[in-house]
Image (cartoon, rainbow over all chains, first blue to last red; front, side, top):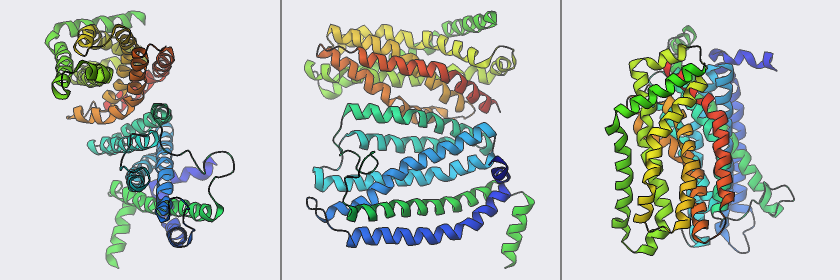
Amino acid sequence: MWKWLHPYAKTQNAYQLCERLLPWFVVSAFISFTLGMVWGLLFAPSDYQQGDSFRIIYIHVPSAILSMGAYSAMAISAFIGLVWQVRTAFMAMIALAPIGAVVTFIALFTGAAWGKPMWGTWWVWDARLTSELILLFLYLGVISLYASFEDKQQAGKAAGVMAIVGVVNLPIIHFSVEWWNTLHQGASITKFDKPSVAPDMLWPLLISILGLALVMAAIFIRRLQNEILRREIHRPWVQALVAEAKGK
Amino acid sequence: MSMALKAVFERDLALAYRQRSELMQPMMFFILVISLFPLGIGPNPETLQKVGPGVIWVAAILSSLLGMERLFKDDYNDGSLEQIMLSATPLPLVVLVKVLAHWLTSIVPLLLLSPLLALFLNLTEPMYWALLSTLLLGTPLLSLVGAIAVGLTLGLNRGGVLLALLLLPVFIPLLIFATAAVEAASLQLPYSAQLAIIGAMLLISLALAPFAIAYALRVSQN
């Protein structure tokens, strides 16, 4: 596997791989995200208790799940970068961070908007809301640490260490706030038995999760390409690329 | 090797002793922040007792952040950190000794102040003992984890605010368990479970943090 992966440590190869993958991701993201949203927001049956306002679940749950997924992806690429000294991994890490932060914000925002009609308040200091908020702070910490270094090579390493410290802390934060206070309903699909969501609602939800994941992946690929170009601006292959783009 | 570690330890203690006014500042900050709360919330003893443990812990975290930069900054600026890194002594051990010296000189004074602050905020005696034991177990954790971020922000000119931004989210579990312990003590309940968790976190960070700090210093030193 390493033999197969290793060429992509070189930024040029990673860039070209991104270029090849991007159209596939854009098309599949467009299809699955549209399908998930339209099915969920228009055609899925409404909840017998919450009426139509539960439909925000099709945005809230995907963004909440993927906010954590993006953080672990970020920490894994930081780990790869620190252990095997792969520069591209740090670029991937920092390309992911703002996407994750935005998705975390979306999860918090939709959660607040959903909480108002259901719990009667925008914000409660409930365990999951709090840990999601702390997750947002962790993202912002990584981003601002990276931004404060002039030398981006050093910035990548420093932000990588912080991302890993955050990932070690995340379960501790999660359980500590869980014991501290709980109002949020329990997990509905990620628990290890039959999901407690009706299949009519579950399918659009799963498709929305897939759709958002693909959208994030497509944005990530583009951001990674930008990051590579920005960092490698003086390399001959980038210069050639720029010259070619100008010639058109 | 133990000679070198002892020398580093004694040097750090001597340096701290010669900069007494700098050591005083976080202590004064600690007392000041805590005396702001009765003025802000009102002097009702019951309210103060209710918010007291949380206030003392938040103030302790903030004032330990204030003194945290001193940990490596001077050594970084005058180049002695580079010499330490070049020496044959393993860097994780050296940073562990430095963190210990720092904890003794800038955090232990805060702990000595805590009876006074407990009086200010009208804590009962069982609450005070719970508070003191959480502080004893929890503040070394603050220093160890904080030192990682100090190491990372060492090369930056204005690392102070960034340090708070990086560290405050990481300290939240500690704050939660510590205040939960004091609250349990105020209800005459046993609080050894919370202490055990804080102790576990301390042991984990004692095992892992020195390596992370050493790596962070190497990144900063480039």
